[in-house]
Image (cartoon, rainbow, N blue to C red; front, top):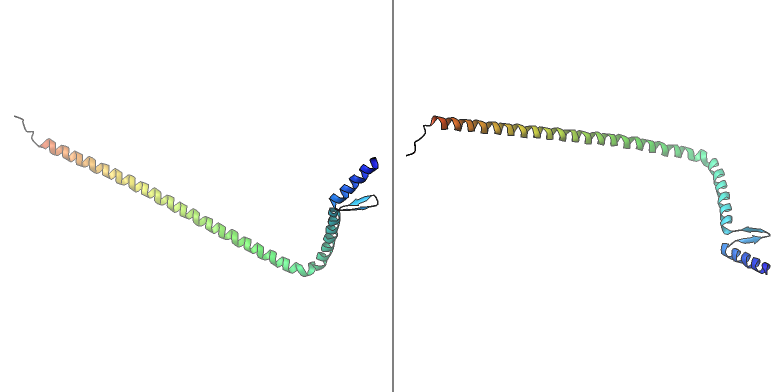
Length: 133
């Protein structure tokens, strides 16, 4: 009875995993793909070391251009940042000037009204008061 259950379990695992049962060892498709990937990686590493003398100048050129682009980008960013800071500073100055002009015109207006009021009071004082009958 135990043997039947064991055989059924082994058959079920073998079918589900899609692997091969080889004399006590079970190798799944996943393990086979992993080993194939490792072998391919080793071959690629060996090939790159042989090709590195040919690829190296191109890689250096691409890296050099990348660094030049980064420096250009940083320089333009800094220039743009300075321009924006200048614009903001000019706007603050203009706004402050407007506030001062508004305050000054309000003060002049107040002074003018006070002067007119004083003149009206003086005119009223000079005029003889009419007696009511």
